[in-house]
Length: 387
Image (cartoon, rainbow, N blue to C red):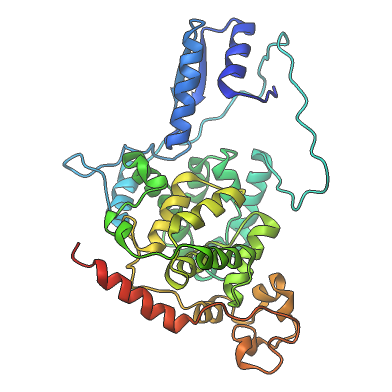
């Protein structure tokens, strides 16, 4: 059944028309999802219908894995170890045939005018095919190639997980036949656990979708005003003059997705090279990522910015050139999304400023000097130490 409009109103209307006593829904754990659930529950209560919230989008529901004293984990590794011990149920087989009420009609989805910038295939069947392809293509090498932006080394399942098209328990169950000592399988399982860890952190700290987990970093000096706005615009449009950063931002615009390693690179650049608050980048990701997940987005940003739980230290500042050389060694990823550099040989792609033909096709000049901004970031960090 297809309906669109205000969620609470549409569900209440369908429940009223069909005469049901209970509406079942998958429980949400992020602040916006909880608010929506509460709104639906109140609407249904008006017509004496009960909202039953079941299960979750996670292998282990946020809030379930705690330390011995009942407090939540702040560090990933002990969370992961206890998450593994806690375990999860195996997927159940569903009935193939369901009886749907014909008394309430579906509606046509609104038409989209113009050309779409990109298309995303959705649904459980396609997600299952994607996972099966990944198992053959890259799972056993996942630990070695997942960070390579120029290779097809990731699962491509972030959209499906974010929208509930495939359950993490389904993925975990299908890992069981593989060699338990496989590094690729182990690392992939740990990546699933990172998603669950961040959901757990957000469940216990709902303010951290837009506020600092470590409040000391709210006291740091960040740039504001017209100059900061200009730098933010260059970052958003992929015109910073740093090839790896620009390739990532253009990939986001062109595809609605960005490689996870590159997300860390562009996030570090925004916060520590441009001295802008992480929330600006997180909001841009929220507005443009087709795989947007509230917990992973907020705490992925806070991890890189150094202000999150179990975060990368603030003084770990990614060098965008070295990151490019390491994770796109032949420049293929950059050439794909930054055609102004397509004419350069492998050795020159990540440092066009050092070569006579680097700007021949109109590539942007660097808007900042990384080495200088690194020193500036460390100086600003020193100002808040001990607070």
